[in-house]
Image (cartoon, rainbow, N blue to C red; front, side, top):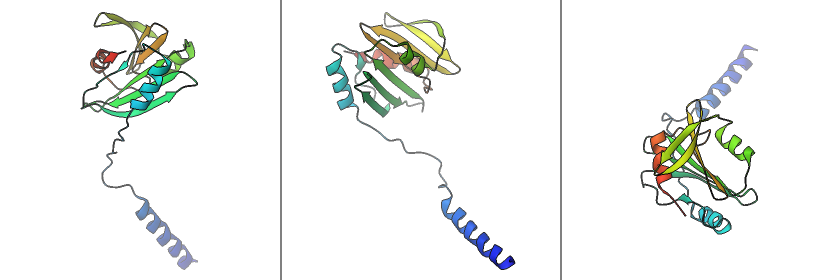
Length: 160
């Protein structure tokens, strides 16, 4: 019985040794190209504002267009290793806003280049919301770690 237990223990140690993570716990960032998603969204929602020409130091990692829901989501890793996201919907929906902001309460307004954005805060997450015509745009989501300055930079890059 001791010999059998020893064999099982050797197998477990061997599997444990092979299954260990690498010494470096850094994850590689997967860069995506959002061009086709942005073009599809702007084709269905004429005049919508979307981020244009982001700084090269911002690495785009998320691009998802859902035509049935009329939603576009874009995300970047900033030079400070924060995550900033743009989300927009062409459909008026309180559920969208609640989901994107994590049900955060409104915490005043922020003026960015003459445009007043509603500010939502939940713990450390900041969301800025503005309605452009029939499109609701949210900068920063419940998953965001971006600072208000990074969201201001993102807002400054919006154009139709």
